[in-house]
Amino acid sequence: MAAERLSMRTIKEVLRLKWEKKFSNKQIEQSCKIARSTIREYL
Image 1 (cartoon, rainbow, N blue to C red):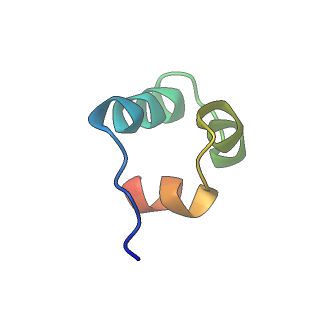
Image 2 (spheres, rainbow, N blue to C red):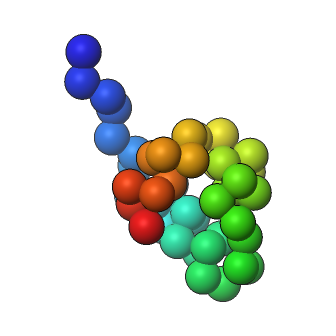
């Protein structure tokens, strides 16, 4: 089964947290409730 894609809103939130708020991938994972591997994929 193929994985679902993230919504554009979620992708924007990941980018905002990473670059504006200087969150770590672990903090983004906890905030957005998505896997760190997914976060790495989009960064």
